[in-house]
Length: 178
Image (cartoon, rainbow, N blue to C red; front, side):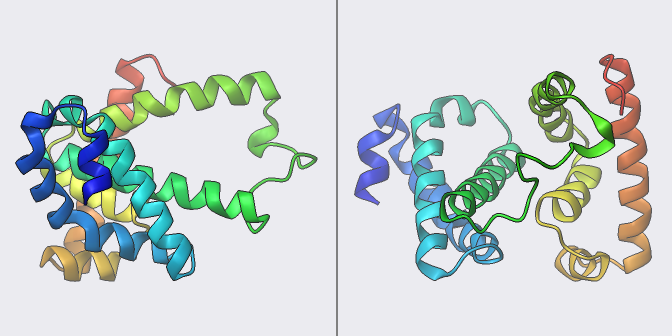
């Protein structure tokens, strides 16, 4: 915990950061272990909490759900970075064509829209945001999401479909083609 407090961008938020850490550290570790072995998973989680501590003042301006989403997205991205570093990432190789036949420049434009997409998801009503987070970020099955949320699989599927439609509509409003 001391390493996080040492890089905390606002020492006055120490208690809030401790609560944030205790609330989400186990969840973050479970997510990292989906991708990595135990020691690398711990590294990914540590790196993610350090990143959160460095931006915690900004995160405190967000809702609790948005702070949680930021952390989980950071853990997932760090896990992918560690897999790449070890040469075990099974994503696109440099020589492989990009999905949809995109050129490098088109792919860069698409990647730039990623931050806007995350912001849109985080700004959605909690009912849809949680389902989208569980299905898209945590990659839970409808059954896993239903169990975690205390809903039926059909209810999760309906919320997921409505959430995707709402997200698509908001993307179009922002001038981003889904």
